[in-house]
Structures are given as C-alpha cells and as structure tokens.
Length: 305
Image 1 (tube, rainbow, N blue to C red):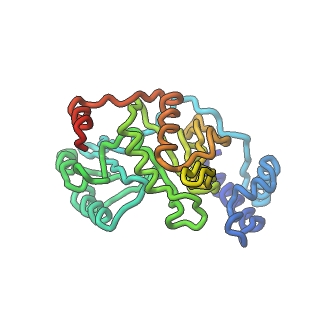
Image 2 (cartoon, one colour):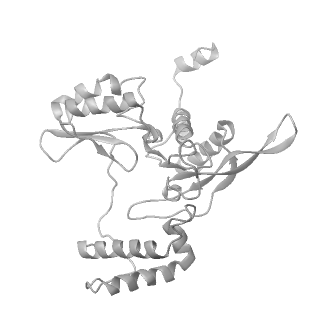
Image 3 (cartoon, helix red, strand yellow):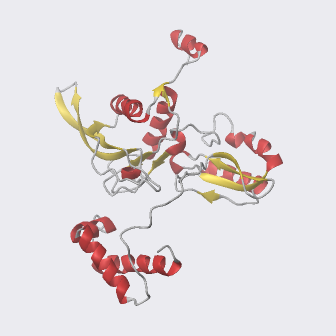
C-alpha cells in the first residue's frame, strides 16, 4: 500500500539489509544491485519481506500496486506553464547535462531573486524550475540575456537536448570509463541540428556499468565500454573510448527496463557514434531529416559557417 507507514517500513528494511550484508568495504561492489545479484531477485524479495514482518507494524507486501485505472501523462517541465495559482506561472530552464559554470550559477540566482522570490527547484532531468512568476513578468524573464541567444541556458529547448541526462563521467569520477557530460551536450546539439522528432526523446549517458545515468530506463541509453578502431598508421585495431547503446527503456505507469544492449563496441568519436544514433532515432522513434533553410544551404555551399 502507498501509505506512509508502508513506505517507511519498506525503505528501512532495504537500508538495513544493505547495511548489514552488502560489500561496503569494496567501492566497486558497494551498491544495492550487487546485493540483489548475490541473493537472486526472489530471495532478495523474501528477505525484505522477512525484515518488514519483524517490525510488527501491520504492513503487508503485495507483488505490485493495483493497476492504474486512469491514463497517465507525464508533465512537461521545460518552458512556460500556467500554475493552478491564479496569475502565476512556472518556467523550466534547460541546464545542459546539469553542468553549470560559476557565471551561470550567478545568473540563475539573479533571475530567481528578480522573478521567483529567490526560489529555484531542481528536476531529476538535471534542469531547473523558476516557480511562482507573475504572468505579466514572464515576457521580461524570457528577454533576459542569461536566457538569450548564445546562452547555454534555454527555456524553449529541443526535444533531444532538452531531455539529455548525464552522470559525472570520467572527468570527476574514478569509476567512469568515458567522459560523459561534454560528449552528451555536444552530441545532443548535433542530433538536434540533424533530425526532427515529434516528442521528447530521453537520451541518458553513464560512464560505467554502475549506471548512475540510468541508461536502462532511457529511450536511448549510452554506457561507457570497450571499443576498438583501426589505426591507419599501424594498420592494427587499437583500443579506444567506446560505448554500448540501450534502446527502449520507459518510465511511468508503463515502465520497462532495457537490460540488453542494442549495440556495443562503438567508438565514442562522433563520426562513429552519431550515424548509429541517427539511425536509431529514425527507425525506432520516427525521426526525419531536418529541413534546411535555403539561406543555410547557400551559406554551406560558399563555405560560410
């Protein structure tokens, strides 16, 4: 049941079992998934139920929550949206891969002080929301330099770049096999410029199998892994930073975990990875090539970027 007593008891049971029985001395193994693997899923579930029963709080555990009877629609968090409070709006701002510079942090703080009473809310997609903005001030907010052309911070982000999530990656994590954040931001921009999709496409990056970026529940998940590429100088296959791609994960009422890689051993270089991602977007998610404006075609023909 989804009541407070049941939720607290379940959480406490998982934490206590993890505390007492996990490999906490080994950082590589100090994660719940390894304890579940050690037990086996049915046995781990039985252990948790046994722990909950020992608390004698009247909590019962079922195999699943009752199936929902009403349709579920995930709210869009980026962009401008009316609140239920009269005369108020919330504005979701893209923070690419959740990475901020000092300047950007100050810009966000200034916007919050000026428009949302100093309040900033964070989303699990690594973006921010400025809530409780007066409707008559929204237009002024959108004109701010911090959200204007050339800024990384965007209110009206594309369906791809607006739904890209990344773990810390090798730059600041000793477990990361690849650099994720810089690659995720760069590749999302390129994909956005190459194809058009008709709905949000969640692309998650994680640097290692620990999957802090939760690639298995993303529409497209990219996990750091081994890859080899021909070295033209030596004529030999050489080890290079690479990745595995997972496809078809889902969240919400119709959740699904994509456990098996769709493709693996892909070099991380853009000329290798981007064609594969474009192909997946077209075949699995109905993407089409983005139509180029005539002036952009002319500029490319005469060599102007």
